[in-house]
Each structure stands twice: as C-alpha cells, then as structure tokens.
Length: 393
Ligand code: NAD
Ligand code: DAU
Image 1 (tube, rainbow, N blue to C red):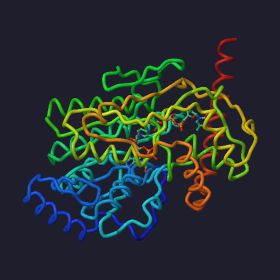
Image 2 (tube, rainbow, N blue to C red):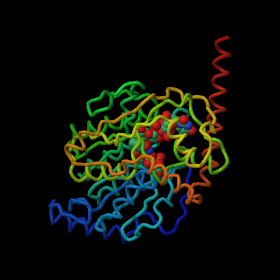
Image 3 (cartoon, rainbow, N blue to C red):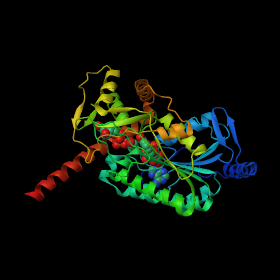
Image 4 (cartoon, helix red, strand yellow):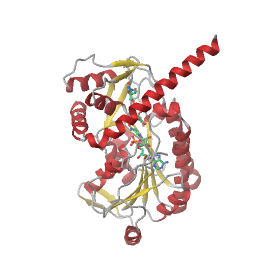
C-alpha cells in the first residue's frame, strides 16, 4: 500500500489524548444521553468522542472540518491508511487538541478494537472508491470495503458503540437515461461495478449485524459529491486540473451519462443529522436534486476557463458504465428535517474551480501519478481488447 505520512504534527494514538478521551467519555456517560445545543450543532452528550475512518479522504476530511468548525466539544480520532486517495494535508489548520490522527488500516482487527473501545461512535467513510481502479484491480476493494467493514462491525459489537456506515447510491445500479425514476430506500440492490458491489456487500453486513447482534447502526447512501479536497482522479477535479496543467479534458463515451451532484458539506450535515437523530437500523438516502450530464458539467468548466465548448477529447467508455443515478431524499427530509443548503450547483462548481486554482500544492504531486495510472489503465484495456480479438480469430 502506498504511503506518504510524514507529518510530525499528527501522531499515532497519543497517550495524553487517549487519557483525555477516556476521562471525557466517562464524564459524558455519567451525564447520560440528554441533548444540548452548541452553536448550530445538536450533539448527543454521549457522542462526543468520535472515530472517523477515512478522515484523510475527500468526504471524511470535509466531514471532520465541518464538525470541528461547528462544535468545540467534539473530539475526533481519524483512522486512515493514507492510500493514494488519502492526504494528511486535507486536515491542515484543524485544532490539534481535539483531533488525533492514527495511521492504520481498518482491516487491522486489533487496532480497530483498541480505538473503538474508548469511543462513543464511529463514522465509517474509509473505502477504496474509484470505479476505474476497481475494474482494473478489484482485490483491494474487496479487502478494504468488505473485510474492513467486517473488522469494524466486530469491534463495534464488542465496544457497544454507535456506528454510521457511509455508502453510495451506486449500490442500486443504473437508471434509464430518459426517465424520471429515482432511487429510494426500497430500491433493489443491483450494483454494476466491482466498487459498487463491494459497497453493497458492506451494506448487507451492517444490516445483518444490526438484526443479529443488535448493534446500533445506521446506513446512508449518498449521490455524487463535489467540493474541495477531492482526489484528482475523479471527474470534476480531473477536468479542472487537466485544464490547469495544459491537458485536454477527457470525456468517457458520448458524455450523456447523468450523475446527481451534491455539495460535500451537504453530505456532512446529513451524516451528522443521522448520527444524532437517525433511527437505529434505518437506511437514509442523501441527495440534493442535482442531476447533470457529464458533458453539461464539462462545458460549464470549459466556460469558466473561457475555453471553447468542444475543447476536450472523447475517450473510450468505462466498461459497464452506469447510465444514470438519481436520488429521492424525501425520507431524510421528512423524518430528520435535513435540507441541502448548497442548492446553486453552478456557484458551487465555480467555488470548487477556484479552490483547485488556489491550492495547487495540495494536488500537483498526485496529478502526475493519477494521469500515469490512467495511461496504464488505457494500455491494459487496449491489450485486453487485442487479446480478445486474437482468441476469437
Ligand atoms: P476517498 O477515496 O477520497 O477517501 C477514502 C479514504 O479512505 C482515504 O483517505 C484512504 O486513505 C482511506 N482508506 C482506504 N483504504 C483504507 C483502509 N484499508 N484503512 C483505512 N483507511 C483507508 O473517498 P471519498 O470520496 O471521500 O468517499 C468516502 C466514502 O463515501 C466512501 O465510503 C464512499 O464509498 C462514500 N461515498 C462517496 C461518494 C463520492 O461522490 N465521492 C458518494 C457517496 C458515497
Ligand atoms: O454515486 C456516488 C459515487 O460517485 C461514489 O460512490 C464513488 O465513490 C465516486 O467515485 C462517484 O462514482 P462515479 O463513477 O460516478 O464518479 P467519477 O468521478 O469516477 O465519474 C463521474 C462520471 O464522469 C462518470 O459517468 C464517469 C465520467 N468520467 C469520469 C472521469 C474520471 C469521464 O467522463 N471522464 C473522466 O475522466
């Protein structure tokens, strides 16, 4: 596993922090589960010490920032393996007194048992998340997404703490392009890719652990996120950073595939609402009615840079490429009163473009590596196609 953890400001299981957590948890447990209001956040008094897996990734780090900026009573321990998608600098600027970083693997049963034993809750973001990589090498997706979730569930069972599992709308498979149908909590699971099938498997494990062992868990399935700190391998940051590095944007197939976009802060507020007030055993879909085709988004990005609408390359389509995702988020809105606040997608996209323009140091090293991986993927696919032709003749 690739690693680049070298920042001395973060440490692995700092004993002082651990003591503080233990004292704090004891105090909080003594007070009981009375709710209180702190700033804009409602924090259950029994959930102040939270382990966030994958907290150096895109959504995990935004979630940590979102929570810490709104409540100064929450202590967070990030557990992250710092794969190519994790970046310790995504946590820069956060209060080190309230944030502990543990460099480790969610599949390490002993480590997760130790960490969860002194926590009140665990929010589970860690995963292998990129569809293109899952098609080329699914092994690591099965290991992290399925075995890692299993290790956490066993530790949660032992510690008796609250667990929130972050999943994806991709578990429901694809919807037809020209329809108004949307996913709901009742939609059947029909994952298409190695990535989405491992996420679906993890969801099944969580459901079984709730029913069989009575763990206190919830699940959310969110649509496509955008915003700062997203890895440059993903669609929106890839196109922005292609332009910023003098490359042409790359569109798969005819570009008509539709994704349902939500700002990452709206995902964070939804996860927080579920953690605080969600009903145990329930699944909540999260989405912000942000359906856009890929070509539409690409042309918005090109326009923002003052480039012609056709200044991109059409490249080979992703195998098994899902046509459309769309989420009906009525349940979380009606039962928890959650609402997205970033409802102007074009404004959010402009801010995201500005963030990548202003934070080149955060992504420039990864950019070269990500594009190198894309070149290898394209070569592998070409080789496979040639071998198929050869076998057929
Ligand atoms: P990401 O790839 O940006 O981050 C994943 C993080 O998990 C990284 O920091 C990585 O280092 C860490 N990680 C990977 N394997 C690990 C392991 N074995 N042990 C510990 N840490 C490990 O992903 P993201 O886009 O932030 O997604 C976070 C979660 O949200 C995932 O579970 C994903 O399935 C889900 N999700 C993502 C989206 C989206 O649009 N990005 C939408 C819905 C749901
Ligand atoms: O729906 C939620 C999911 O959204 C998450 O569970 C995944 O972790 C996350 O990666 C995302 O999956 P997608 O496959 O939808 O995202 P990606 O950014 O890889 O691609 C978005 C769309 O853009 C998809 O239709 C493929 C297309 N695409 C992608 C890339 C990288 C391109 O046309 N060109 C590209 O270069």
